[in-house]
Length: 260
Image (cartoon, rainbow, N blue to C red; front, side, top):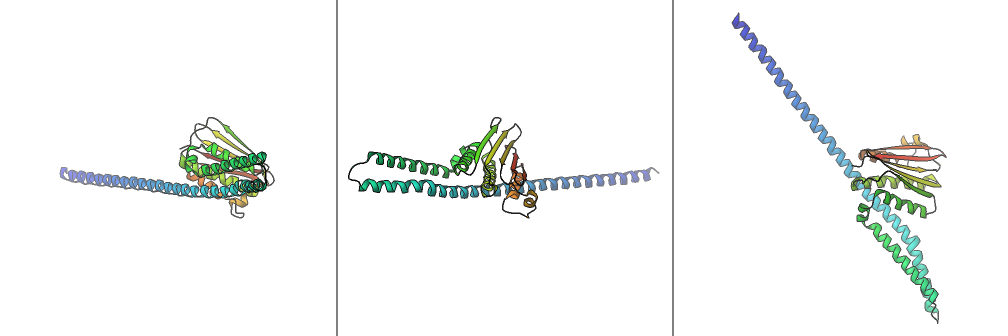
């Protein structure tokens, strides 16, 4: 009887040991698989972030070149054309016209200032050193210069620094919103609100334009506004984008993102 009990005990203990080893191996495999999955997801998010960062950099450069092209044509080109006329008049006159020469000198100075500003806008270091609100203020100033709409920038709370990589993506998102307003909204006023809290940054872009059918845009029945891309980029930087719009009542876009 004792021998049978011993054999039973040994068999029982062996089964328990095998089950325990199997359970430990299963847990080890499951944990490793979970870790690998987390690493793969993290690597995928980093790849998507890097892709959006590179894409945003290219788009910002393209937008900068387009703006510079317009500024050279509309501002510098006109000043230089006027200066050429003034120099021709001075050359044809027998006497020195000091007033005309002073005007010509002033136009030379204006052209040099405009070209200096254009050169500065090509310098990526300026973008890295500028705050997000400064960059947006510069874009709003350009929009105001077209005479299409009144613009206003409001900031609430003490401004927090945003990492350069994330700042570029956010700035590109805001640029897209501005482009939509200029191309489609027919707005008379544009307001941008920055709200800095300890947890995150909230950006609101509000226009009083003609609005649009939000459902048609988000379902793909109406294209061209790039709003799907806006929500996608917001998710990649760990934030979210909300859009509200009604026909003839304007549009409000809200971007919320953590700083890091």
